[in-house]
Image (cartoon, rainbow, N blue to C red; front, side, top):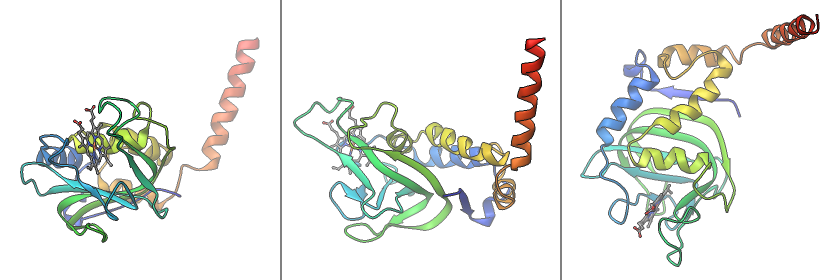
Length: 205
Ligand code: HEM
């Protein structure tokens, strides 16, 4: 699936990094633990959506989504230490992410944001049961957001946006235009191939 981004026109000239920084500052979570767990759309520890809002009554929120039915799962084993790499981690197929304000829904229904500022579709991250936390992009991206830390998400986005010649340092409008014109052309990949060949000859000489 290719990446697409939809955003509130009021933020058109914000860079993605600027918006993520302001979202993170407003999310200002006091943490997760027992008091601010968020939840899955189906309740329990599995579903198509996981969502939470900042602690201390913050309206700032996010919804992580999977386009696969029952595609996201949380491992919570009280029998293992909370600090274990194989406990308290998210796995599954993470495809979409919405950031904004005023989380609603849940409790068996779909989550919504009354003010949905930006939605990324096509994140295309995948982690298997047993992946644990370390090296698990699905977990790191979402647990980062839960702590008001957007750096893992920025890394994921920059990785995808590089294929279109843009990055999270660009504005939503610039990114939207780059995504609309498609991935960098096959012709430029060919040019890279030719250059590599020329270097090979130079080394051989
Ligand atoms: C799905 C996204 C979630 C992620 C990425 C996540 C991640 C984590 C992590 C990394 C910890 C820290 C464990 C430690 O090192 O001490 C933790 C703790 C905890 N999580 Fe989650 N969590 C998620 C969702 C949930 C949900 C839906 C619940 C619902 C009950 C929950 C309940 C807890 C509790 C109770 C603790 C504290 C455990 C303790 O201190 O004994 N989490 N979580």
